[in-house]
Amino acid sequence: MMKRSNAPIFWALFGAGGMLSALTGPALVFITGLAVPLGLMFAPEMMSYERTLGFAQHIAGKFFILAVIVLYLWHAAHRIYKSLHDVGIHPSPASRMACYGTAMAGSLLAVYGVLAVGF
Amino acid sequence: MSDMQHDARRPYVRPMTGWWRKNPYFVCYMLREGTALVVAAYAMVLLTGLLCLATSEAAFNGWLAVLRHPFSIALHLLALAAMVYHTWSWFDIMPKTMPPVYAGGKRVPRHVITRAGIVTAIVVTLLILLLTWSLT
Image 1 (cartoon, helix red, strand yellow):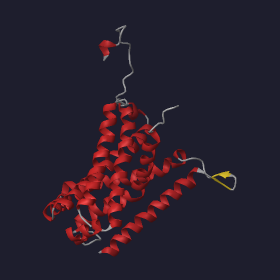
Image 2 (image 1 turned 90 degrees about the vertical axis):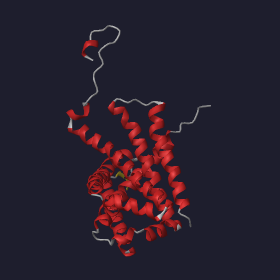
Image 3 (image 1 turned 180 degrees about the horizontal axis):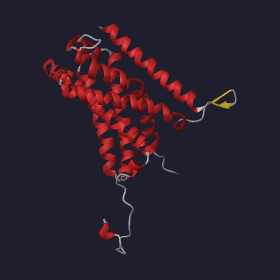
Image 4 (image 1 turned 135 degrees about the vertical axis):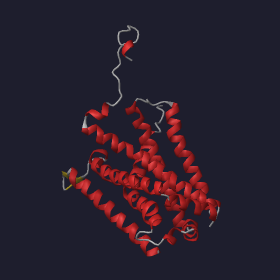
């Protein structure tokens, strides 16, 4: 019997994360990184501790935060792993571990985070 | 490398350095793949914020203060440019990366798929901005 490849899992995560970041990335970077810190368009209190905590304690907020962090990370990890080849770092267990390992560690921390903020 | 070129046991290997800079098509390719670094970095910024939020109010306010630093603003401007390029390039290559789509027995043309994707991205961006606005 042929051993099943695990490649489709990584490609699916790459695709899902790529689509999510293509649709939400520009808006999120603009809001969290520019608009709120600079006080453009939105009041700075919008991302205050209380409001952000409330968002993260809501079940829908938890899923949104988790989806963004986890899928962005796996999309990036897979793309970087494949592209290292183009700069002369050929696929190896070490480069695989560096890319997917970082994504896995980040995902676990994100799961811990959305649980630790409470309900 | 040059002194190894004539060694019989270490045959000449064409160097890879800078191969992509010789052709604009490959420059675009490397830029497109390079957006992954920005996507990863931004996910890490958000993850840091989440962990600060889970730690304490002081930690979270510290994270907010870092975001207000001019250096962070400059990096986020670059990140925004990279994200927009990621969005554009993602839908630009989608006709090649997705299975063929047929409508009325004919293959849907490339530009229709790309445009549909970009329009969706614009709609989602406006929705996020409106939703965030309604929260303030």
